[in-house]
Image (spheres, helix red, strand yellow):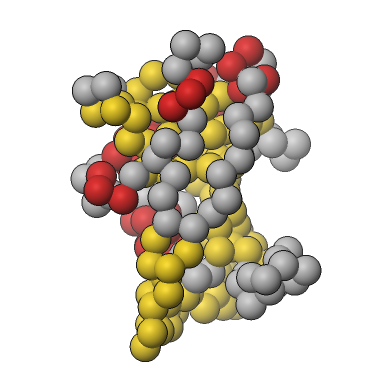
Length: 173
């Protein structure tokens, strides 16, 4: 069951945020105005997790923002955080599925909810950013008909993750 975040369930925000093993990376290539990629599999995977963030309660009340939570019975096991981006796309700022619930279709259901929300808001499509080393996420977006729209090799240059490249994925209507 997917429900919009409200004052009553806002404490469930980030419950699904769990780390993952980095087993490789994609290597994007831009040629003839088309992005493609190959994969490099690492010999030694490593564990990565994102920092928890506090929920901005404006996502509850403002019509150009939303958080949808996925529940299995009473447990929040997935979430997607969206806003209307300056370029006329719905920006997926965060999508997370608890590790024991991955590979069960929850992420796809959450993406479909984002697409539905973008259509309801008369947007051009859906976009998001992930890192080249999040190979599972990149495969997931490609499987769900997202295409690479650009790569930024400087976005993380001042962080410990400076070796990572930002990959921007788009689902255009």
